[in-house]
Image 1 (cartoon, rainbow, N blue to C red):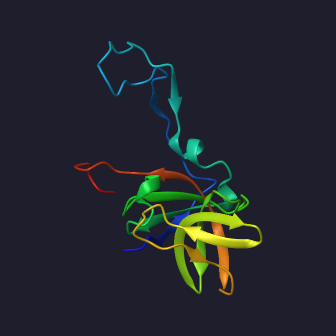
Image 2 (cartoon, one colour):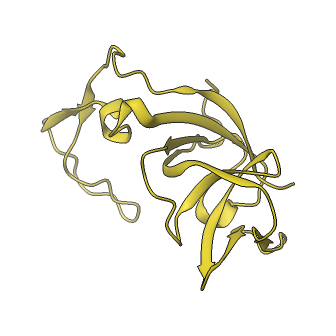
Length: 149
């Protein structure tokens, strides 16, 4: 299944934000180490992932074509419309009227969309109607067993 996107909503510049505790020390993914006994600061996740509220929106990913870039079916993507769609960036783009999320590649004057799952072919954009809807800046991924939103 190719990866498409479903509309979730735009970032609200006036949203009531909630700061959550943030430990500045890293959590080891290897052997355990003693935890710090104090919080260093608070972290507001909305402020962390939304740099430009007026041009940012959220979409939910569908499919498995971007699994190699850590984008899984059901993940929430943070997309910024104000960023340039440069070669190498992951973008949300309408191709022939259908939304998809892929990595933009340019070779000379030719642009292509590349999935990060080798089961999917390169999509040449030459001769096709395409419109960039924004650049993916963050992926919010729920782990197996976590409660769904």
